Image 1 (cartoon, helix red, strand yellow):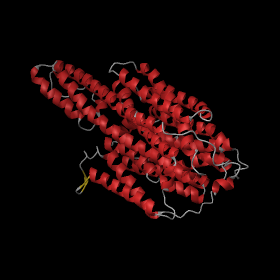
Image 2 (cartoon, one colour):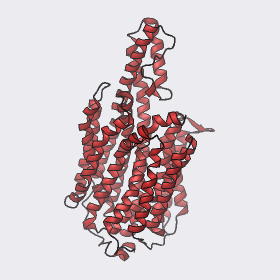
Image 3 (spheres, rainbow, N blue to C red):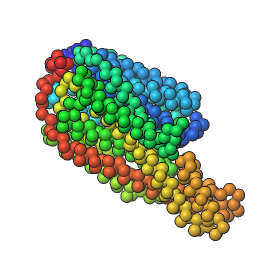
Image 4 (cartoon, one colour):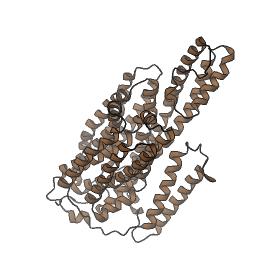
Amino acid sequence: MNARQANPWAALGALCLGFFMILLDTTIVSIAIPTMLTKLNAGLNSIVWVISVYLLTYAVPMLFTSRLGDRFGPKRVFLAGLVVFTGASLWCGLSGNAEMLIAARAVQGLGAALMTPQTLAFITHLFPPSKRGPAMGMWGGVAGLATIAGPLLGGVLVDHFGWEWIFYVNVPIGVIAVVLTLLLVPDWQPKNSHSFDLLGILLSGAALFCIVFGVQNGQQYDWGTVFGGVTVFEIIGAGVVLLIAFLAWQRANKREPLLPLQVFSNRNFSAGTLTATTVGFAMTGMFLPLVIYIQSVLGLTPTTAGLLTAPMSLLSGIVAPFVGHLSDKVNGKYLVMFGLTALAAGLGIVALQATPDSSPWSLVPALLVCGLGIGCIFSPMSNMTMGSVEPRLAGTASGIFNTARQVGGVLGSAAIGVLLQARISASIADEATKAAAQLPEPYRAPFAEGIAHAAAGTGEFGSAGGQSPMPGLPAEIAAQAGKLATQAVHSGLTDAARVTMLLPMGVLLLGVLAAAVLRKVEPRWGTPAATPEAAAA
């Protein structure tokens, strides 16, 4: 099937089904963490690896996999990634221990890296610039819906079927996506006979791996020694050095570099890529303090926690297609700036409202503001970033754009995790000191020290509520100490979550500044869908 015979909307629907699975798996796991800790008999660090290894193997190969689409055809690479992702999802569900699950998630991330760059490249091929806004609206709606719907679907599956089903659910979806892709997506061949920049692939992969590994797992090693005499900061430093070497090689490589630096001379692409990085940072990181607050403090089950965020998901999915149409008529940068500001404002309202005894449903208006913001971001941001890129660079630019968003997500998860853990330790210790004043003098210092030690330890604070931190106390003192411990933990977690939400808010405001640089996209490159030969030139 060629581009002339293909229905572009049907093809986009098939591609979006696979894209939905990828983004769903970036958020669906977080809500299952408490259950996996118990069922897999694993420590918290092992379960965190289940999340981080997926993000690592997703982000690191993206520049390389975008080139594979240019070389072998986006449909073929997309299908290969879809098969790998679906098979790895089945492996994840069958895993009997944390180590096997981590290995399966690494393969799953590689499948996602093969698929993601091909979706945007197909949009620029199938739709002319004048009709690209609605297509980006559909893509943006799927992106926003999948990213936010993860906690809802994950909560329902975990509560009613078990943690394995957050992975098993991908298998039938993946099979359907494979069939629809084979039937509906044209076998577009860009006919760009690329040579692979092997040195560039190795340098970029090693650089991203070192930086992401160091930041994502720094807290696990207490920002100290990882192995031998090598420290976390030395690994991050090595990543920075490798990144500089990669950029120097790309500048020196006159033949066909992995990262054509001339693409960054395009103002919209540079500004849009920076904006996408801030969006990935904020949207990945915002869920950690939010989920901990609504589950560990307010006591919601995974399903109820998912239901609480469902209106946000629904609104973002409804808004995105309309914003896609609107972005063809107005300067899309104002839509992006509004969306980023609304998302930051929604998080700010949540932070202001959060108390240990808040009604969970009082947070819905603020979450709706977040959903409105998310719905306004993706389609105009993607359209303005990719719409001004020459067709011959579409695959490479798509890879850079998606890599930036995923690296932003990895850094956001790590940075917010580090800040949250630091604030938990400090806030719970302060609250424990205040609560200890209500106990008889001999018990005050041991009580405060016990709570503070627990907060600074494994981080498995969710099970501490109601239990006395001092075994062997007289019954009347033990009951009082247990109640005070619960109050201290809940107050400390609430304060930590509120402070931590300031970080994604600040990063989103940086995104507003980057989006302000964007210029309205004018149709410059013809109509790719009508002239595939020109698009592939």
